[in-house]
Image (cartoon, rainbow, N blue to C red; front, side, top):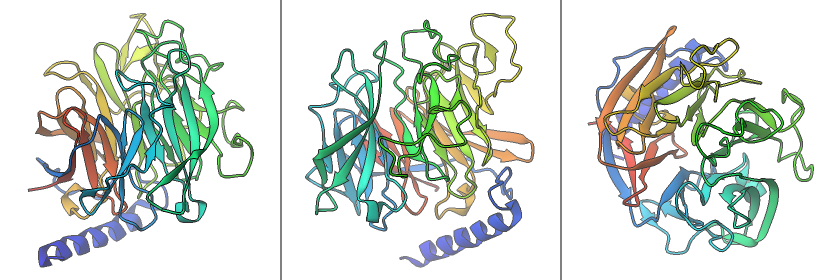
Length: 386
């Protein structure tokens, strides 16, 4: 490591220790403030991917990045080099890539090295394409999954081809969180967002590590079923801050408002994010609607400047002190990327860079460095600062 890199890493480590001491265990509602960054840089890490939809790591010390391709494959980046053989290929099971369907999410459980299994979220070839959450195991080769080991945990019938959500990840409680869209079309014509009798338009929470078949319903789930929160339109990407355990959830809007929602660590059970009563902080169908009991976004932006669809990101916890505690998110169509952070009771939001990329996802490596995918060009970029 270069001397400057060593110094930066040391500063980041000291900052993290200071932050943890000041914020208290699990609270994480505010950060030790430093000047808000004015810009970020993007450095191309690798390319040649086909419609990348997700980037993540296995948490196993291998340093690998896993890139999900919409058509049904998962590929590995190691030290900037893309492995020639896919980690997983289920193209024959997945709805042919296009629109909002396909292979959409990947999650590795805590203790993956010992468990040697992982979870994916995809739309299948049944009917118009239903959502499937499935588990796969590894072969003896850690860079190759066993396709024949597929075990379906959950299938959700989709009434339309869009608004499939797609994100799944393990939370700080070691439970599996799954984001589902409202089922599609426009305006939520079936009323799924507010309907607690359907799993569409929800944030689900399952216990898949207890040994129960196919999973157990966590005792703290508010409605006695898989639903943890509701009132969502198309929560394409959400994440937990690895330092504070706070939840950031970006929900794609209808025609006007893109939003980012927030829940402090340990909160959010039974939350209603408002769709389709509201789109962002605005009434949607009824101009006289009430926001009572609804969770309103902490950041939002209107369509314009080429914006069309929010891509949720992550809170930065890597080696750059200036970016510590900043939540980075972007827009699929405009390529713009913002930074968001909480300063006491106020949320600070700033445009950091305007790109020509089609930003389909952000991702985090084991060290807390952040990446994003250009869906159109098939490139993966690392986020940094000048």
